[in-house]
Every structure is written in C-alpha cells, then in structure tokens.
Image (cartoon, rainbow, N blue to C red; front, top):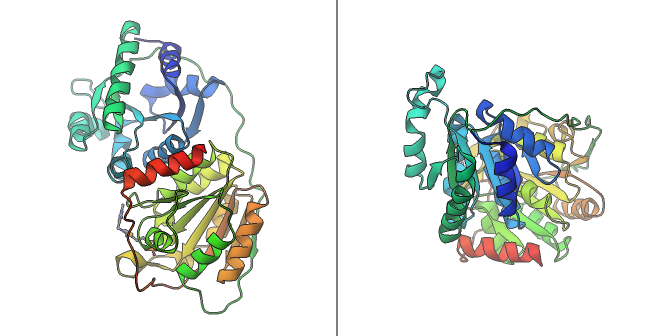
Length: 378
Ligand SMILES: Cc1ncc(C[n+]2csc(CCOP(=O)(O)OP(=O)(O)O)c2C)c(N)n1
C-alpha cells in the first residue's frame, strides 16, 4: 500500500499536476489529496468521456494531465480515447480502478468489466501497467509511463487494484456558487441563416488571438473551408467532446476560447454544461449552432426544437446565454461576449444544410493539434 501524497509528489516532480475524472471508492484517497493539495488542480467531470476531453484540452494548453476513473467508466471514455486522443496523438495518464478483479468478490455489476479491463485497454491500444502498490515502485512506474507516452504520444493507463492507497480524509471545498446568469432573447423570427454565414460572422468579429474548437462533422469542415489557421481545431470524431476540450483549454490559457458546437453533439454530453458552469472560465464562449438535425449524417431530426439550451446554460451557471437566429446579430453577440467575462453561450438557430463545395481538413489531425498547441503557447 502507498500513500497518496507519495504518488502525487512523484507525479508532480514529473509535471503531472492537472487531474480530472469521476470518483471511484478505490480512488477516494487520491482524489481527496488532489482536491486538498493547492499544488494540484482537480476538475470533477460529469462523465469519464468528458474527463478525457477536458484532459485533452488541458494538454493542448500545455499541462501534463491525469484522468482518474472507475473501470466501469472506461466504456464512457472509449469514444474520445479512440476518436480524439488516437487521431490527434494526445497523451494522458489514466488511473483506472480494477473493480471486479477476478477473485475479489466484488458486486455483480463489476464482474464482466473486471474480467475484461485489461483486454479492453489492449484492444483500444492503451498501454497499461499495474498502479504501484509499494512506495519503492512509484518512480519506476511513472518513468515507464512517461517513456511510453513520449514514444507514442498516446494515453497510458495504470490499473489500480483494491487497497493500493492508504485512506485519507477529504478537505472541505466550497460548493460552486448558485446560478445567477441571465438568458436573453435576440431572435428576429426570420428564416434561419446558413451555418457558414454564421461562421463567417463569428470569424469576422474575433481577433487573431481567439482560439476556435469545432465539433465533429460539417461544422469543422465549413470552418476549415472558410479559413484554415493554427488557431482552429477541427474535431474529427469524439462527438460531444468539443465543449469538454474547450473547458480544458480555457482553464489553462488567458486568451478567449470559442467552442462551435452542434445541437446533436451538445445533447450527447449535456452534463458538460454543468461542469462549465461550476468551473466558470471567464474566457469561454460556447456557440451552439442549432439546425435541429444531425446534418452531417443526413439530416435526421434531433430533439433540440424542444430544448431551451440558453435556459439550461444559465441554470448550470453560465454567466450569460443569448438566443439568436441571425448571422449578423450572432457576430455582434460574439464581439460583446469577447468583451465581458463569461462563460457565455450563444444559442444560434441555423438552417440545415451546408456549403455545396465543402472541403475536408487536409492538415492531418496530429499536425492540427500541434500547431494549435503552439498557437496557445504563443
Ligand atoms: C459517438 C458518435 N456517434 C455518432 C457519430 C456520427 N455522427 C457524426 S456527425 C453526427 C451528427 C452531429 O450532429 P450535430 O451535432 O447536430 O451537428 P450537425 O451535423 O447538425 O452540424 C453524427 C451522428 C459520431 N461521429 N460519433
């Protein structure tokens, strides 16, 4: 058994001071110490996939990250691990608990995942090792993880057996403030604009210092077609993870970060609204381009016409949320949002469909990630 502080000190010495995840009882001492230690940052995520996305954003912003989660949450993380970290070559250290380890006599819901945790990680090509269970093993385990991540540029997992870490208490932390934000309605009621017309106005109203993260599908392709720049990150998979990545970036840089989301993608990870509201990064602007359909896959309807995203955003703690249905007004609203502390949401109604001649990013994802990382560091 090791002490959480011994692991965290050795990890900090190697630059790992940014943690995100979802708790597991095996992780209790680790999370309690990360929360209690002013030298480490912990972002409590709504889901394990969101945590992977937050960590990816934090890595782009220059942090060395750790995602802590229960193995039952590995399923939630598989999508971003395979379609975000892998294509973009974004590393993160994972500490995955081993509930249901064969022979442990754990609860029935952990039995199957306990049997397949190792093979699942192998299948998605996340190299793994046992979480160090003795103090003398910590440094070597971390060095091996660092070497593997440096060589492959990909995530690496420690699998933590029961009883690996001594118990510690939880220092009290203040809860997030109660929501006080306000939603505004600036809709004109005319025919909704094309998504690219809104994107054009957003780009026209943002200075060169602004970072843009576009959700998967045609949104990113339109952004690329309008302008391909180092400050653009086009997610090519990981549907629903643009906002998590934006949160991880915004929490670690001073420059403004604009997330371009879709209604389908937003609905897939609605919990991230609450994480953003609680973390409340002042430099984050979340634009939901709501066409009421999954445009990128053929226009199947989403349930967004029945969802008030702006009300949800302020209920989750966003400082402002604005409903819009006009490209020019969306640009003006972005300029206003850039000038005032956020987080802000712009919920923009747009028409289904996209540019007739739509490009696909010709820059490969690892290059997109590295030039975006360099831009953030600049
Ligand atoms: C996890 C996952 N499920 C499904 C898909 C397939 N897919 C790609 S884009 C897309 C639609 C996204 O809809 P929305 O966010 O509303 O954006 P739009 O296409 O309308 O611009 C879907 C379902 C995917 N990439 N990832």
